[in-house]
Image 1 (cartoon, rainbow, N blue to C red):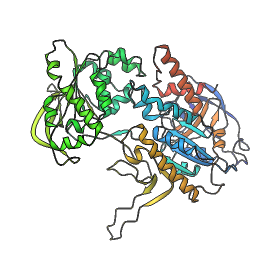
Image 2 (image 1 turned 90 degrees about the vertical axis):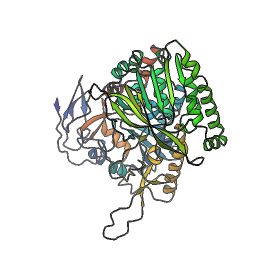
Image 3 (image 1 turned 120 degrees about the vertical axis):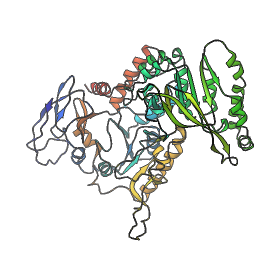
Image 4 (image 1 turned 180 degrees about the vertical axis):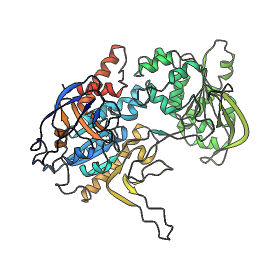
Length: 564
């Protein structure tokens, strides 16, 4: 442990030079843990480097308040919080405007968000958008800072003071709950957690899915969206097929030892109302050594007049329904096969009401109890109605996939029902105070100048990656309109020059930022490129597009060795 104490320098005319009376000092910089106190650094493999005393800080406000005033530039500076698809598409269209400088920050050291940690590893073509995002990172008017968390390392108020506009685009990192008994039993996880585990998200690589996979015979996936289909396919896929994808090695090793041979994917409505695409369904029918099973009874029950009317007006829906009918027609043949095979059941008209614990105790899930439903209502408005009948499906592993949800950020209005930040065409809105106990009417919602939102945080977790394009364009148009109307930007003396901040924050070992937890290293574009090169080289050596680095400490070590 090394104690860092700072002198109290006199004000300096130039923020890029040490203040009068300040002395240069040595600091040990190495591999930092996540929790750092204001003065003590947890070090592994220390290296000595020389720091300007103003560089070592204990609060994020000191970093930005030490920047000089306006640098004379007429650039409009935009900060985007979140380095996923919505953040990058927003950056891309902002950079098409003259004199726009964009800074993208993310709490992880790596960019690309759900494209990196959410897209299935065997869907490499879906990740082709990373080339577009990479070109944005290389734009001369774009900066990236990873391992920098808003609310912990830097406050939103500070960003609003340092930039002409701030765009919130940090997506959805939580899960909607089923709200049924047994949801917290051992063996019950969200599909999002499982996806993040096999894709190498640093927050989830320590989840013990390996023991679940190697002690379970059956799995129930609740939900029928594309994520539900992805996790079902990955569990049953041959590891010989997966080993050439960018699935992380720890997950590949666990899946190779998996004992899961039966997966059921549950939906509360009928085949025609399922949310997965025909492409996803077709992939399930082509898995080596896996029988895809749909009950003919579900097809018949789902062919009611309202449903037939629904699919008659949609060619994609009709094609998907016909494919499911074709799969169902093979059920008798599949059941007659003597050869033991892994099976994937797509089950309809089942709404989970409880996850049942093992009778042996210990809090382990053993089955899912479901209500049998039927559809009622007009075409396009059919609802799943409980018939009163119950069925129980055995399951040692249960994955819930009923939707992602976003979280709010301090000092910004948040709708707890839609899990979105209220906005008008991308402009963040301050919600009125609902407390009118004195008979005073609630105030009219007001737009917060210079604060915007994009992506799932704006519209909710829906759509595909490309859905973020028109969404981002709308937010960028609002920024452009407000800029032209003179609603953005302030006095040059109140704006803080980012270049000065970089000079103060940079040292021989990289970039430092200070926040509530003390000093820590952050990753810029150069550092990310170093991580990317290591991942690509490791992957190519074993026939994969990349082998992801999954430890934040290792990422920081790689990134900051690039500065030597």
